[in-house]
Image (cartoon, rainbow, N blue to C red; front, side, top):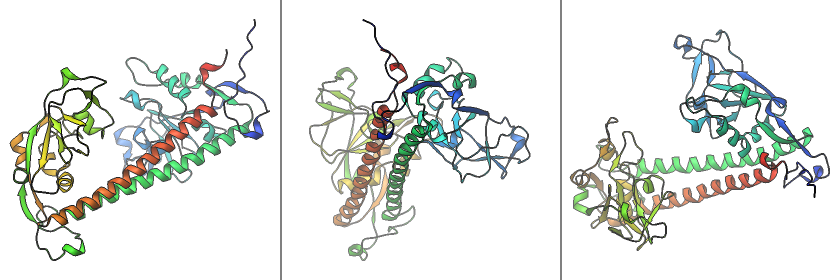
Length: 414
């Protein structure tokens, strides 16, 4: 029996286009053209001038101007960017960054782009930008990467294929729909960033700065309680080193093995074990003792909130508070500057037991004030977690919509 060719239509289609033309397979070269980047030398760089967009200016699908380079305005060979151009990273030391892209907004200062970048200029840029967010695009980028040089050849990029609507109005409808969802995700992500910044501010104000004996902000009921008191970790907590679990890792294990990767990813990367070589109990604080130079894991802490759940791996220490509010100590100790100072940026940092126990800090004399501070920061963490989950859910929702709005390139025929 002859098999009919599969119709090129997505799983989901807007009602006004349901009985219109099928979609078609098109190469990127039919949707627009590339604009090459500028090669410049250090002598061309200025404090002000023509903005050069580079890989660092593409962050999470948006143009980020926190790291800017300018060249002299009269430099030759600069192709000026236009609003709606799609900036693409085509060469980078990291393969993971190849192909990342962002739409250039209308309010961007006069700019060009560097030689490791390219610009795609399309008739309906917002639609092509959404194509660049699909698995079809990412799969073609992966297939295009060379074994030795992390780059995309411009000629190859133009050969990338996508299944697209024949009707430009349908392309525009899809782009407008997804762009609205992107705006919501951006707004919710900004809210998340504000919550994180607010917590950083709380940490700075609720704890004394170096050389001070009282914090900048104090809850009203404790304003007349006097200075905080100096102490060390050895005076308020017990210490134990974690134990090796490498020989007892099991996907079906009862206990989560708390190692550096577990703590640095906030529990997202986890291994399991049937054995609890050093069991952690509710209220324990688990801290990373070893990390690479300039690593983000050293002295990062994990607060244990459940019994019979976690076991502590080697290169992690277990701190059990005995004379201080558990969560207050957690917020005090977590990535404290005292510990970070042992990272010289050259060799691996390894915190020793005596170093950890000698950790000096100050605390309120009244346990109720310790608890009040801890509760305030815990509430902030709860809000941050809820907002992070909301952003995650929105991104997952968009990913599901993308799969239904765009036919996969490998499903063209039965």
